[in-house]
Length: 404
Ligand SMILES: NC(=O)c1ccc[n+]([C@@H]2O[C@H](COP(=O)([O-])OP(=O)(O)OC[C@H]3O[C@@H](n4cnc5c(N)ncnc54)[C@H](O)[C@@H]3O)[C@@H](O)[C@H]2O)c1
Image (cartoon, rainbow, N blue to C red; front, top):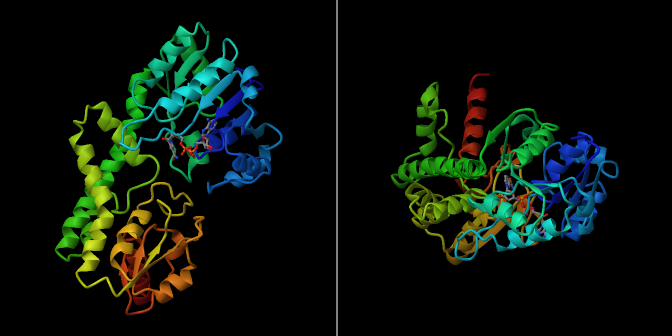
């Protein structure tokens, strides 16, 4: 496919859509980011990233107004050669996959796309969705090629990973597969072909595996700490020069917009027989409760607690489904006061770091932002560092001082 053809990214100003659009635009593809969020559209067209993403600001500046633009006008689909759907795929209030909105938006796109266009689903979808979309296209008598190519980046590393990670591509029809193979090889030649149901499961397995992996570490953390043992000393002992424990994750608040909801999608697909997935949810979602129950032992009602880091992970401004907020809710019920701080998250209720640390009796690291590594917490204040990143830093500092 010639690069001069037109790509529309539906949900294009989001965490997946924008980096993907930037990468294609950087390769010379003519990209339109279609979104409903007017604020984000304005920000992107003004050449500014609406969220943190490594190296994206410079990459956006290089293409905006040239091969990249954002709009809310869906007539841009009418002459598109390719449309990629990267809309959110949340679970509903009953924790079941909710696909009605996605279908509605895909129907609207199908109605506008020209004959012969390629429609790529890139959102993480409930298994079987690609088949249903293909059937829908056919039942409407339309000639649109449908493919599913899951996104596997980690937020914050998107630009690098879109080009370095192999891209899984899939389609039911050979012509659609050929089209998507040609299209994705513009940005990455390392392609892995599966059938769509395999590809849908591949994505859910990836996220659920990560979620389970974190749950193992969190379960061991709970175990050790409930006996008042320092988990991180044990972690260090079992991982040091011992290759078989290489994939032993650090414990921490495993959260964010994807891992839990994709484990829930897989649980639903398994007919709720995904025992390890459900166990992982109990462990990971129970970690804030465990932290509170440990603190309760020495009394909480007269204590001020500071949570440092409200994003769902370190060096991110994304607070979606962050367990720091769950922790805040729990602590608000039992402590004298909860002060929350974060250098990146936008939230009017947050206080400056200095104030949080100065006024707190207890300091909890909610997200392991690198800027906290150099933090000096005054003596006499209790520190809770589930992630072990701050303790590790202090230990390294002490060791290097001793070796001077
Ligand atoms: N965030 C990640 O790290 C990540 C990684 C891999 C896969 N995914 C998957 O990618 C999908 C998107 O996730 P995300 O984090 O980018 O979500 P997001 O909320 O950041 O982005 C979605 C975008 O779609 C826009 N939007 C909503 N309704 C729209 C509509 N009707 N028309 C056009 N635009 C609309 C929103 O304004 C938003 O900008 C999900 O399925 C998610 O599971 C996410």
